[in-house]
Amino acid sequence: MVNNMKATTIILAALAGTVIFTSCEKVSPAGVLMAGTAVEDRVKMSNQYYKEYLDEYKVDLVLDEYTFLVGSDSHITTDPGRMDEMFAIGLEARDLLYAHLGDIADTKVEYYITLDSLVKKAKERYVDKLYAKNSRGFYYPREDVEGAEDYNMTYDEINFPFHPVVGNHDITHNGWALWSNIFHSSFYEFPVLVLLENGELAIDRFIFLDTASGTLGRTQVDLIEAGVLDGSEGYTYRHTFVFGHTNIFRPSSFEFASTFSREETFFLLDQFDKWNASIVFCGHVHKWDERVYNNVYYLTLDSMSERNSPNPGDYLVRIHVLKDGSIEIERVHMNYVAKN
Image (cartoon, rainbow, N blue to C red; front, top):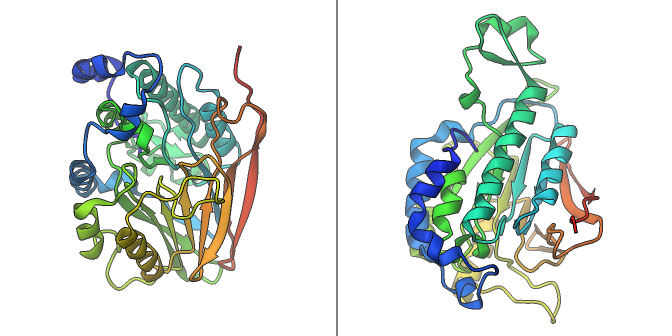
């Protein structure tokens, strides 16, 4: 997804007007509640980008089985160590993709410059490990040596498989301009095609929702009801994985409840059932929670931020989609400790 990212100087130029809103050292309470770009506008912009740049969301054919990594609430400021560790863990394990459940950084221009640089370096490591150049200077997957000369892939055409959703901290103080400049769309879906041992093809679906404002908004509901995220007509999906920021259920009576209206909560629960969702991932409350409702598994992740979770711990999850179609969930340990 993170492809053709603009240079840092472009970020600064495009966002010169937002600096006055992000110059404070800490995010203010008012900023947490008041986003600079409403969900209606974010979803309209996201859907337009998604329709025009579908190639950025394509995933190569997978053989038999795969894994993907999920983290949440990294709240990057000056030290992006945990986010960098997530990329390293995913690359080492050859995870198919890395998903992030929002609040990737606190809203300040400097923090997004750090984030932009981090993602670019992570892509460089990803390409260096998984791709090589043929005699014509084009990239090809290292495991496809026999077909190397047939590839015409440039560096920019290689999709770094990092797929974040937008969180409430990502949109405060006009932060949507910062977030969308790097990641573009907060509302999209893509299929993963799996070639099984028996030669049959299975299709799994990944859906990303914009819940950063604690509401879906009318536009997003309308698009969902219109089937924008339903994939190609006529296909049967084996698994559907849904990613959003705002939690549906609260982990305990002492934790924040969902901010969705009652009508939207019922709509989401019904829609997840219609999609036959296997797992719905949420973040936001910085607290682990897992439960099953109406045959859908809901998983809320703890914060992977070294400020919120200073000690090493199991802050990531790896989802194993096995050859027989079954799913296993592995909690993944993070060791990074913040620098003094």
